[in-house]
Image 1 (cartoon, rainbow, N blue to C red):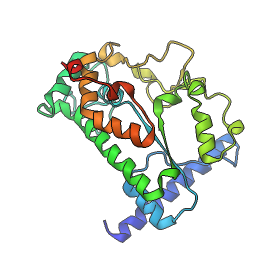
Image 2 (image 1 turned 135 degrees about the horizontal axis):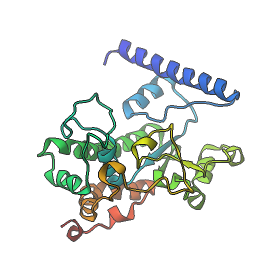
Image 3 (image 1 turned 30 degrees about the horizontal axis):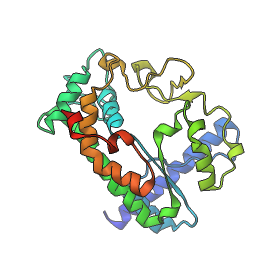
Length: 262
């Protein structure tokens, strides 16, 4: 990529963040609100460091259980290689026209890219390998002491008080824990039903509106145990690296046995 293209991208990056911050401040009536980019890839981070040369910047990276991510992606995203209708990239599944099931998911996991529809599984698997590579790159760029690795599962409203994740963030960033929002334990993103997906329709965690690991589009059935074991076996080295280097442990991934995937 040419220097001119990099400068344009950096300008757009900063102007977009500034616009979002101003909008949030206007809507809330608070001038102390700051919007950050929560989806930064390593190349973009490298440009940012070389261009801005920030000092004292800290980074938080959220990791997610590999099997849960793949199962969620399978249920959430429309796939033109799998579904009859052809939609633009980024379209969501629709139970009226798209078919999903734990059995179909398992066949796609077993297919290992031999079926067109299996790309939704293995693109995500490749993404986890990329994430492992990318996290190493971030640490190399900014130093291990400036990166906090967390499990996204620990941020669930029902768990975050037990995991003390907000205290970890406060200690790492130097922010005042007492100034965090008062209602963080009340709402969570919910994707089990078509009408509840996306940030516009959060679920109250204390209700039964959000069911973990089940989705309406696949008949509200959980992933097969064999599928989970197969994915863990493929991702075990990544999970081992996360555990050893970052202190983020997914025990089922670390302890999966070959016999469980049969």
